[in-house]
Length: 395
Image (cartoon, rainbow, N blue to C red; front, side, top):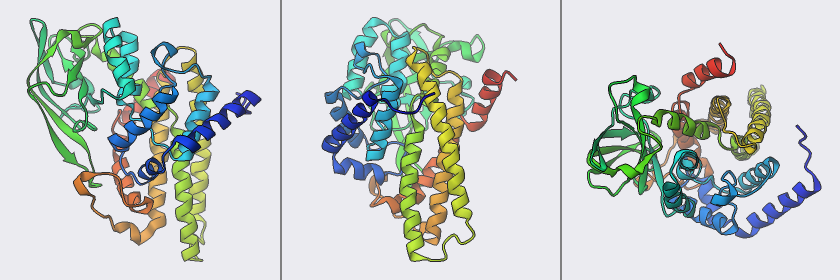
């Protein structure tokens, strides 16, 4: 793969840089840098999304007919890298990069016309109803029941660890529509309005002090049959398709590179304050190891993006990205905490569980604590390794 940019690509890079310089508000950069949660705050993300929608650059991964760009893999790579280097936030992927591909691939024409424009505009803000108490990595054991009653499903049960459910107006759910077959064969994919009577949301405050996840309860919730994606009892296939995009549908290397740049600031400060800092070179060796692995991740992402541009989906290789990304992110988090030393024990509380901290330093420990969950969400590291062994290595 040739990593040297052509003249046209360099011109595009300059166009992106100029756009970011003139259109990325400083308060969004600051909120992103000081955020300790997996996603930035809803208002921050939607403000940036609206700016990108106006430019036509919000969803490069989508087909042009639905509002995407016709960019080459290299242009997508450049855009992602420049956004992270400028301090722009990642757009909330739940609707844009996870649900939307499922609707495009398996939804009806009516569903595409109804949901895709509202996902793009931000009018619909989605959360994901997958995990349940007792059904996390073993997702096929889910029990949220949806029973057919005329032209509606009646839904009962709960979902847990539902990110931004307290902010969302819609949720896409895996539901149990058949108990007679093997577990994977009796699952359906349902779209639900969060304002439907019978839905309640209870907050779960993380050990970082943030409110980002919740438990969602369904008590005789009536959902129109027209909100079913694809065929009844085929939801497991759609869920696996979605998880490929959740695990490997974007550029994580650029995000980690930006985090490494922030870590470099901590290292400079530590060396200025203590001339004997890292005299044995242990920190330097850990930085070098991360840099090497980060370059390998970057090359792997470029290879997979080339496949995506040919009309494919990430496939089982997305599990490689998930395992590697989590390992590197957690390594950066751990290193940042070690650089802070004893000062990292001080963690200021935030009002109302808001994950935006006063500054970057105060976000280091909460970010470390929050990101411990990355080993589990989207499929645990153990599950990913099993997928790699079976579907990539053929073991």
